[in-house]
Image (cartoon, rainbow, N blue to C red):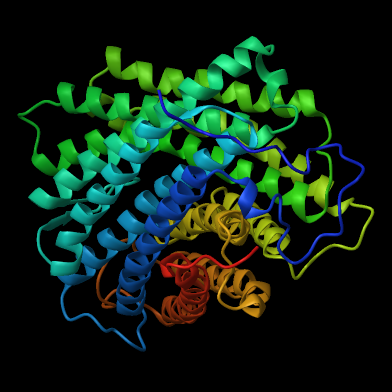
Amino acid sequence: MPVLGSGPAILRRGSDAAPALPAVARPAPAALVPTDTRRLLVGWLGLALASLVIAGFFAMLAAFARTPAVQILPTAELFHLSLTSHVTFAFTVWFVTFAGALWIYAAWRANYRLSWWASWTALWLAVAGSAGLAVPALSASGKPYLNDYLPIIDHPFFWAGLVLLGAGMSLQAGAYLAASLPVLLRRGGARAADDSPEALAMAVGAAATVIATGAFALALLRLDPSVPFGYRLRAFAWGGGHILQFLHVAGMAAAWFVSIALSVAVVLPARRVLRGLLWALLPFMAAAGAVYIVERPETLLINRWITLLTFGGLGAAAVPVLLMTASAAFRAKRPLPWSSPLFSGMTVSFALFAIGGIMGLIGFTQDTRVPAHYHGMVGAVTLAYMGLTPLLLEICGRQPWRQRWMRWQPWLYGVGLLGIMAGMHWAGGHGAPRKTFGFTWANAQALIGLNLMGLGSALAIAGGLAFVINMGLPLVRRRETAP
């Protein structure tokens, strides 16, 4: 079976011979990276960045439609379609396709023999699926359903795209598990990840993807056809959407591990504890998927089993991982590289994760304080991925379009998200409802909060646009630049 060749794990943890690090640390010359690895990285990164372009466009429409000073959309239907499309591409497509790039990178670093044909098939399935999802979004057609975690547009192309994207991601996750688990088990379980904890984190993420796919399938098979269609969609999306959060947190943790190792050359403390925290996610994921065998999807939508298993598991693991990684980063015995996107993306990711988590505990009711919370959590994952992207580009032998942009882009995007979060939380405290078009309900305090959200949206859109241009232009060049 053809396999992707693996390169040496350069700059391993614990190395005392770490070189002086430039703004973007280079783990190896691109010439040392196998051609298929570089091409797959380019493919997954290109697809992930394309999803951000679409997500940013609809984010602008949805955010400014809720900004009293602008109000750019004329109808509630267009607002809901824009909001659904934004969440689909910013939350679903961007996260899972960047996870594809992380699986390729982690397999190369850990010397896993990743299947060539499976990885390429997975990429093309994901490309076809993303294109299908974009058709109703860009043609303003179909009926949007604003489900939590997996909003859906009832349109044939959207459904076909969702199936193809899910098949592609499950295939890539399965290929990573097939390559990684024999190595982990042969070398003594979690101890195999001593030199590459991101490889273990992405194995956990791959398992989450496979389990989430199974939960979606079980939910679809067990739905009660007599239940109203919109409620069935919510029940279908609930469990699998929750379980995918394990993938996103595992991917964020993997990005943190790489960033701290390459930006400040720090060895993470308490490695046995770190490995235990990552492995501890598995029973929570498995239990969240298994309950679909014994409970009907409609029942799980209203009881608390899925919520308790997901956020109990994630909270118990993610918070200690954040504290361990952050404390290690800021105890480094060398000047902190604030201009490095690896370090700044990781730092802003820490801040958004912490603030978003706190917002989830303060006044958390069904108003705009809910999206204030999850914009922090989603933004934390996004900033971690943004900070890692220049490194992945350089592995592919390509350079960001403007080196200077990398220094301020994570800060601009992060400040914009903080403005969105603060504005939404403020407005929610004064009665601003979720997913609502218009301002007939609004008082003066809520209007101030929503205008603050609009200002934050403008900054975040500018930061996102800078990222897409700076990282996207090198991907569309046919000629690779020298590393």
